Amino acid sequence: MGAAIGDLLCDRGHDVGWASEGRSAASRDRATRFTDVGTVDALARGSDLLLSVCPPDAARSVAGRVAAAGYTGVFVDANAVSPVTARAVGRIVTDGGAGFIDGGIVGGPPAHGATSRTCLYLSGDGADDVANLFRESPLATVVIDGPPGAASALKVCYAAYTKGTTALLLAIRALADAEGVDDALLDEWATSQPDLVDRSERSPRTSARKAWRFAGEMDEIADALADAGVPDGFHRAAAEVYRRLVRFKDTPRPPELDELVTELRRPRD
Image 1 (cartoon, rainbow, N blue to C red):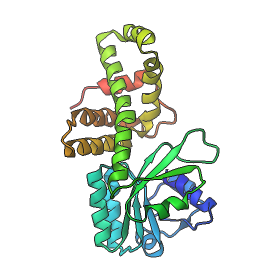
Image 2 (cartoon, helix red, strand yellow):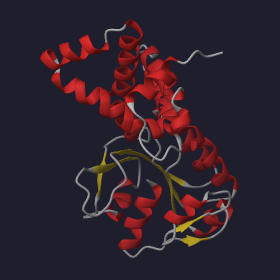
Image 3 (cartoon, rainbow, N blue to C red):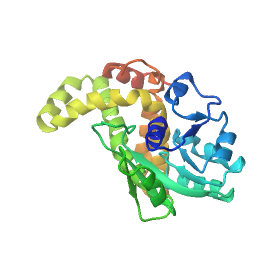
Image 4 (cartoon, rainbow, N blue to C red):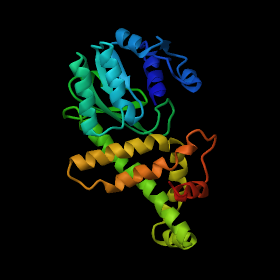
């Protein structure tokens, strides 16, 4: 996602920097158009705007590293985190002298010719300026009239359904398999809920290689629900479903559904 957004900024004539320190060969391959400044500290010293797109559980540490480097530009946190986490990230960078804009991305990596929409939601002072960087590009932008945390709240609500129900469908298929009623369930769905037959096969397989990241996102969603006084147990369970699929992170192909069911039902210590 970060590389795709960086490519769009390059297309629009911006100089995009990145820090190769500690990054994989795959990351390096995706960053060939960017200026490698080596370290996060160097990136912070030489940038006017920093866009953070990382796994949810790294959002605070990235902000802390940037603040410690003395960054005083504009920091955009576009991670899949709860409003509480987004506001905490904001405090970290603003206490260090930077500006802060909250962001949330809905959709896959943006690209020219893509058939699906990707949207960057933004909130906070200066959000319009960031939105203008992507105007008439494959990355749509929507500025939400609200303080930092509003964009993250929108992202959390959206993913609570899309990724949460994917985990639920996989858990249902695993239970049906355990009880020997999977074929009967599919027959019933084909009659009364026909869209679920394909979705219960396709969505978990598509998500499996990203499950290591989705687990943290489900935790953030659960935290947001709890902070709002809403029961959070469903998304705690969804996080556990995704955690049980982490071994598929680097598989060369999407796993079959029976592989996912087997992994989900594997006894745990």
